[in-house]
Amino acid sequence: MPEPNAPKPSEALDSLRQVCAYLASANGKPGGRQLAGEASPLTRNLLFTIHRQQLAMDWLLNRLASGKIRPRLRHILHWAMAEHYWLTALPAPVITDVAVNYAKRQGAPSESGFVNAVLRRLWTEIPDVAELERELQSAPPNIRLRLPETIYSRWKRQRDDKTIAQMASAFLLPPQTVFRLRALAPQDTDLTGLQELPALPWTVGQRLFHPLSSADEARWLKTLEHGDRPAFYVQDPSTLLAPHLLDAQPGESLADLCSAPGGKSLLLAEALHGTGKLLCADRSAPRLARVRQNLQGYPEVQIVQADVTVARGIPLAAASQDGVLLDVPCSNTGVIRRAPDVRAHFSASGLAELVRLQGDILRGAAGLVRPGGRLVYSTCSVEPEENQLQIQAFLQDRPEFTLDCEQQILPCPAHDGAYAARLVRK
Image 1 (cartoon, rainbow, N blue to C red):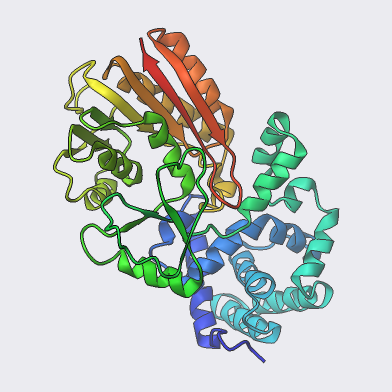
Image 2: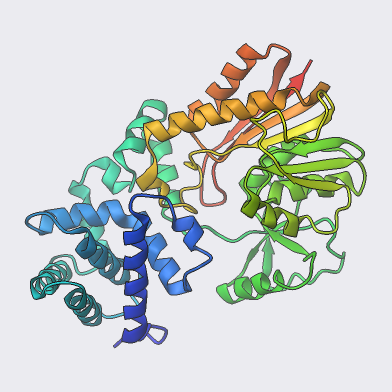
């Protein structure tokens, strides 16, 4: 019998159709994060599960199926395996029936027969997720960890096996929703259904909460949709590291030059207490819409579309800023649990391109920092080329700056991975 909350076969078919359409349209491009706001909860859960488990699923399918599996059939099999092994709301016969009928509509009868044969063999030989994990013990180590060879081989040269396993394990967990109590929140803000999290070294002075149940999470997320300045902001603890290192003070002139979506900008605006000035810039006009929404009601904040790598466009005088924050585009290898499609799209060439862009942003922003001012550079990556090595290269080119401090946070169940460095202009 299906579980009480199991989707109906018609709902399962709709989710299968949406999953296959997304996987086909992605065509090797990142997209799981963008889809999060567009798909139904069921489809979103399936897609994130597929991204997390795809390496293991493909390894098993390649062992069971003779010959090459067409991409459209592989998408159907991914959906069925995700439903059966990790969501488990539908019984295996229903999953098989939905998958086979969909394959029949999409292709030749032989394709539906192939899907039927593979799934029946899977359910017989590997009936549950416990047996699946036992089967994976003979897989290569990167498959067991659900890490692509491109990432796993890099990390093997940089870190010990225990650290790699801990990060990989964290990436298989759904990210928890963390609510930060904003500075403007009333003292008597209702905290029903929320559990306060212990402070981390870089979150001292902030109050972070985790919902006690999925119902509490849904209720509190709903409250964020009402009012211009809600009491909470959804923010992973790792995102507080860079603003913490910038250490904004009332009355200062600050700039956040890669500001979208605005969570770090909001922390800076709160630290100013209605004084000083904060310029928020980003080169993406659509992403700036979110910044404007988050920064409503802060008259000291100016928001502009500009590219810091281009001299013109940033309306700031040289050597005028007390503090500059650069939360640069990066490979996202510290946030794979939130962006599981990073596994499929990480590459050495893509990393090299990002490193060049990050260097351009650093050099473009450096001249805006006044003598004695701070420049904080941050990523959500765990790659040395984007972090420590990037800062070393910058300091060799710009000896007027010194490294005051830096910190690498590795991903774990409590928070994502992040890096930040505070540079001071002599």
